[in-house]
Each structure stands twice: as structure tokens, then as C-alpha cells.
Image (tube, rainbow, N blue to C red; front, side, top):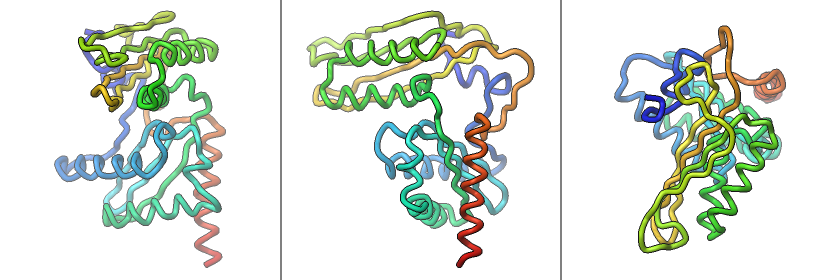
Length: 237
């Protein structure tokens, strides 16, 4: 069963939490989530946004953007974040607060690796060279295992095929195993190429906080300082 299900969904409520926190009115909420994520992904350069967490109350939305390049997302003096917040307020018709969370080790983040591979393939870089470089960088950062699967018309071949590169171990059937996963699609001149990335970061023992706003102490300090920045800016006005 571990081979047939999404590793993140398979561990929901055990060692991972939900990326969107809300209840009731399922149809409207999921459409709104899709629009918010699509806008944020299109707003910033490709390959710098890892994940987007959304928390809702009745009239308020808190959006946390995990990124490897927080300076690009925040902008000069926070102008970029303010613009995003105003646009999302128009889109959702609710009060929106935007927090920025930095990814300390992008070499161990499956979405960033998958998006980096997409960018390399779209720039016509050899897929074997790109995959080996990402695997090597993950192992250097003490990942217990990494697997990358790529499928499609590789190097423009007439017959589509699937290739897999793996290093270390990936325990998909163990619920306490912290496995990060992401799937992306590269749109090349030869057609679409699918990319799947699994990263084994270790095993989790005991209870773990399942709220979306997970992070290190440095990340939490960054979020608090960012909120404080907005409060001061409102007072100065």
C-alpha cells in the first residue's frame, strides 16, 4: 500500500498535518484555496515557493508561504508582501495576513527539488546530469534516502519511458518515517515530462505538532517579526 498512495496523505494525522485548515462549505473553500495557490505560484519566480499553508476563521485568512528565497517574496521594505496581501484580499473578499517562512535546507525539500528539475529540463539540460546533482546534494545534507522518478519523452526520444534514480533507503510503509514527496510536470518542446521526488528525512518518535505553521525557532522568530513589522507600519500611518 505504501507504493500506491501519496506518502504525505498516508501520514496525515500521524506525523504530518493539513496544508489547509478549515471546515464547512467544502465546494467554495476548495475553489478559493485553488485560486489563492495558483495566484501565489504565478506571482513569484519559478522554483522558490515550496508550500503554501492556509488557515481560516470566519472572516480572516492566514497564509504562510514557505520559500527558499524570502528576500524575493518580501521585497524592498515589504512592498511585495503588501501587494500580494491586497490582491488576495480582493480575490477572497476577506481580511488576509501573509507570513513568510524560510526553508533552511532547500536540498531536503521535495517541492523545491522537483521544481528545480522542471526548470532544468525546460532549459534543455541533460536529465541524468540534473538528477544526479540533486541526489548528491541531498545525500550531502544527511538525507537518509532520496528517489527521483522521471517519465516521458526523455531527450526527445520517439518512445516514452520511465527512469528511476535512487540513493539510500525510503520506508514508504512505515508511518513514523518522515517522507517528503512532490510531483511536478515539465513542459518541454518534446511534450510533458512527469517528475516525482521522495526524500526520507528520518523517523519521528513520540507526539509531533500537526499544525501547518511548523518550523524551526528561527522560522517562528521570522514570522513574529514579520507580523510586528505590519503592526508598526499601521501605527506609523
